[in-house]
Length: 117
Image 1 (cartoon, rainbow, N blue to C red):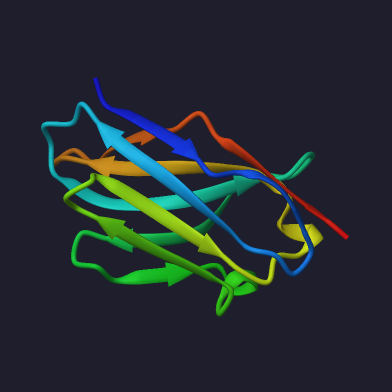
Image 2 (cartoon, rainbow, N blue to C red):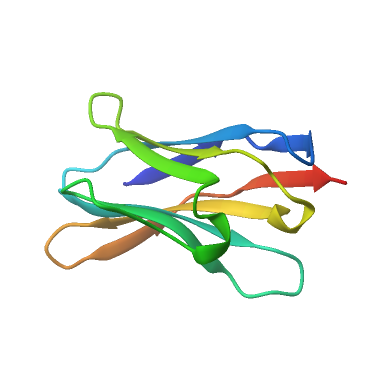
């Protein structure tokens, strides 16, 4: 059973930084891509950043230049480095992976990020 476990969330002041981690375990399928999503109260879940198997990265416009996604194949971990955090970045952040030929999605349980002004 594929499992994605996030960590690294917390409370930080505006302008601060956090690094989220997502460890992938239990997969015998190739990873097509990984992404970080977030969901703020009363809002839809949105894609924040993604990385393809080939290493191409992409970002939601509001986080470009502030967030950076990266992966460590040895540790089966994907990271989201967040800098210059703003109160509007406050949300639950979810890790997502797309696996195998069928492109099956798996999600982590989420980690709360709160940015105080």
